Image (cartoon, rainbow, N blue to C red):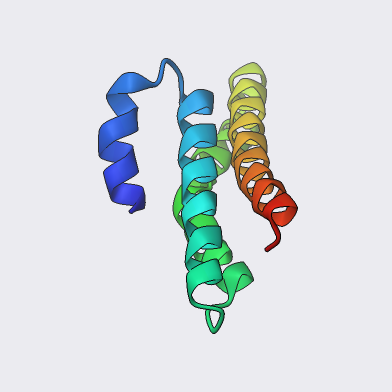
Length: 105
């Protein structure tokens, strides 16, 4: 599902933050919907597995490497970008959980 969303939303979204938020929100909604249909599924474990696919780990690693090499400004900018993407990921999943929580999940 995440692969399909990446193929569809990558050309449509204007920037990476919007793409990350939309992908995580729709994935979270799909997971919440599946757990409503099949209560034996564990929503938290499925979401953790999906978060691992979307988290900007390589970007964070490159940012820390830049800081350690001596490119302080470039490293800080990359680290802020990685944290912004992680925040969009968090807000997307949180929005799906809150939306389905109000619906009675």
